[in-house]
Amino acid sequence: MPRIIKNTQIVEDHWQVLTLAEGETPEAVALPAAPTLLPLAVWLARRNEIVAAGLAPGVWLDAGEGPEALADDLDRLAVIGVNFPKFTDGRSYSSARLLRERYAYRGEIRALGDVQQDQLFFMRRCGIDAYALRADKDIDKALAGLAVFSDAYQAAVDQPQPLFRRRTARGQEAA
Image (tube, rainbow, N blue to C red; front, top):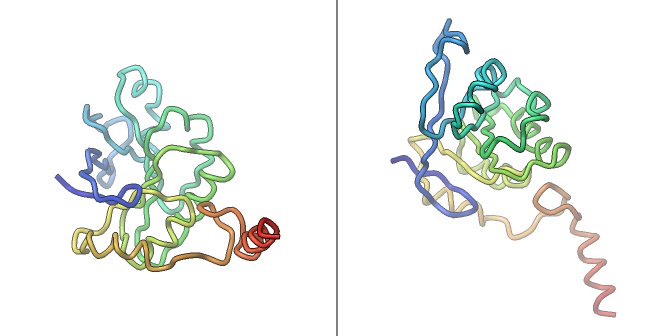
């Protein structure tokens, strides 16, 4: 069974990721009974059928798809995947941050695709809490990479106050 990093631990991944073959329509795809991350198009086309069947739904967003399409369904989704089709495509960072900050999503946000160790710290800053690394990457080294930086200057999802405000607050408490 594949492994992922989730909440700074290596765990077995019980979710599968469904992708549409070229030319395949969302209505034609067979829905698996196992926990599955569905493409956004399948979720939007078959939402009622999926919910009525009692399937454990999860959805993944491709880099060009925004989270606003899921705004009314967030309480139904245990996992939302954000796809990084290549290392240099950063659009999914924005999707993760919007899910956390604008839509207050508290479930798992999982990085999918071309996920590498160098990105994990920055992904966590944007609200991503699970990482499905590329198959050719060492998951143990990647986990260690999450601890490379001990603090960050800027505010982000994982630390809403910038460092200068945290230092000021500590100074006022000491006085």
